Image (cartoon, rainbow, N blue to C red):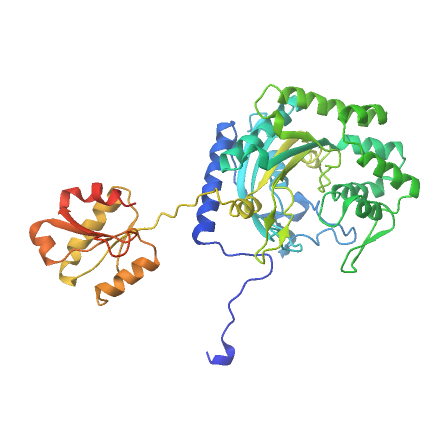
Length: 465
């Protein structure tokens, strides 16, 4: 391949490589999250990356004329298949397909990547990891949803966040649906109204942005136009007035529609059950939380951080919710012969990683290997014996892979790798059955090298790792 035809390395927008400390922290988070999910009694499930498109549907798109615009869809013989955009839709398909074999209520967790063909930036990716927990079956909704709120709190605290660093905002979609019903807003406009309300706390929106989306259109700072729900002045005004209400008691007095009252009662019951646990202080009501995904029809939750995050350019950004979810009573019933309600939450692992990596109190300890230097190739067999002893004792270790390099170059490599210890043995050590190690993290100028009997290898190495 000539110079002109050589490839330029790079990634498509919205996709990232992860390595070193960032990847160590991500793996640690996933382990903590999974352990906590299991502690709360959830069982693991893994589904394929692809689903038949019609089985999972599309609940993301803002463009009614192109409902699959926000997902990655491909032709597969006589069918269309789609990369999963969340873990709830595949769960619905799985439950419908296997409901006779499942013990209900079915409590499942899944930690897998999902894919969305949308604008990236500020901790928004087109491929990212979600950690989901769902409860499927006919259960007491107050208990199930309170348990999910407890799970969110417990998990985020285990990941290293403090209680004052996040808040769990809850609401019930029935409250807004009842208001829409009382205003006699047509069904065709309902989804746009819901999505407009859901953007209240998004950067650049606020009440004015929501009001524009409820009416004809919204023009953002770049000049881009988003078509609105085309509500009348009075309809939009009543919804905006509703969004100004922060107190559950006042809301109960203001909204008399039976569906709204039902949603308010469900919130009251949830908060009562949550008071029996240890995380009630983390939970706040926020009636603008309706969730953008159309399959939610009751309880809704969004978990937000109480501290600022910065992008790679050092600019403060709002990364949005780090854990969201809600109740869906009809998602599974789309499938023939199955009508099972469900409720669940989803932690955005990569968003959480983005936030936690900026907190100085989150310590990320790299497990760098001990390096066994090769002083003389004739002792290669002995070096591998030392290496085996280290690995048998669960000590991360490697042997230098080029015996032609002198010790100086081997130690330069070890320092770049941030190896804590180098094993440096030559003819004298093997004759005397001793081992020499060098503390590579010691203070320069001090004597960081010691020699000891071979049987003391593990004890001596452990002093430095």
